[in-house]
Image (cartoon, rainbow, N blue to C red; front, side):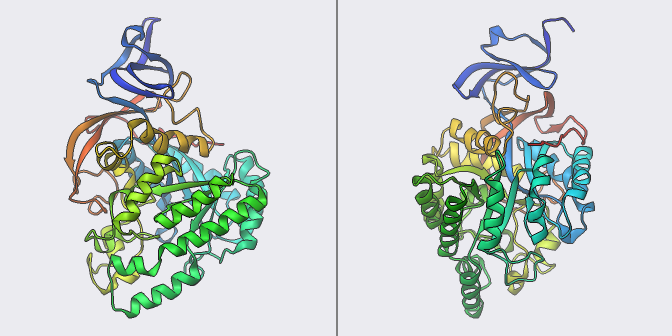
Length: 464
């Protein structure tokens, strides 16, 4: 290799950079970006990718992933999911993810195990969010932060009337967490915002009505249940002078609540899910559309897109969870009275994040490509402490790239996915326009035109 040759070059692309979209390419060497500019200024690459005039984006960052379900055997299931789900992720252009870890026992003694399982099996770089599901987890926050984990999730106050092994989280626990978060640079408290008391009563009414479909599920957790919890989060965030992040905002009322606090200068960030941007309660999905909080009417979906455009919602994730058809349907099929007992969850979201954001967002003129990059990459890197290492195409940043053909089409079916369970999703049967053609992870061409070119175990833990 000559002195002027680098490991990999993408050229003839529309490169989305912080300064705008340029015509040219990106040169990568030793896993980092070494040059961004016009094709004529770039060196030769041992691997040379002609983007054909398509977009070149920073690899997407999914801030909301659930790998290693405890009820399936933990941490053994974490090892399996790291391989199968991150494999699908890189096919879809997701090169970094943040995984929620939840267990009854203490986290610090097991953190090295979690990291080692990821680094031995993941195709993508990863970080962890720790769920404050038991009181003793709150005492671990300083040691977790010292180990590079600076995001802490609370279910405030959802699931207090269920048999899920998550202790009730009320304002006292939120105060304890946020008081520590406010003292740790870059730390953030994360919130699932649904009011358990209102949800319990509304679910009782929905069940008694005899419904067992997505409309009944939506009735069981109305937008007010989300908005009233976001308001409480805002009060506690201001009181502690902390940073908070509301996961999976689903409703117009939830958007309005977050916006009220943001306008007061309170640091409450908003996230929504690609599923809420792609699906509504009107879709005939049965248990495949069951997510918490629920899918809602189309006007809520448009409110979410509008919130993304004006910056109230600055983050998009997936809530990806690896669940088989049999587990999700309880062996009873997609529809039926078992609906209420079926577990909620989105599968396999990381692989359809980019195609659906292109199909329903960019190609429908709901957002620009630059805004897509912000909410699916740059802002997630900034919020969770890995910018400018991740989330941006710039000299010195990690060489995580995705080439996107905005006109390429495909039908989402069993053959579309590369995860452990390809047989169901909330977008099965949908025609998409906009696909990743090449994914570069750490300067190495990982996926080319639907072909996997790398082995598992290339991912690294991101200490923040």
